[in-house]
Image (tube, rainbow, N blue to C red):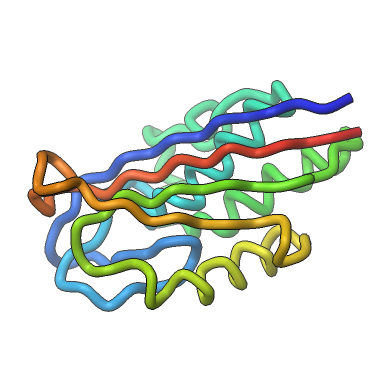
Length: 157
């Protein structure tokens, strides 16, 4: 059996928070405003995996109204979901991700982000790719107000 999943996340960018993408801190004067650490890429990956496995969504697993998830490490959230997916017999075939960010440029950090995703998921480098897009100066991403991420995944069992 094979299944696909699609994950998406958007967070406002604000001063005083780190910009974290795929578990890597990217040097910038703004970061994601979120209940957890705000890592839009890990959130999109988590939602894609949950959707493909029909286990729910990230908000059901880690409700933002629950204080225990305040400033939580999104890698830990992803690992928690991953254990449940693997326990059901699913295997990750691949992830295809998109980061939409006007500034800073993502490409210099892409390989480090991919390596970290691979490490967290326990998969091969050939199974994960992350592309970058800008907002073409259109709000909210293009005006530097937000960052978005999408992830498509393929699971098999």
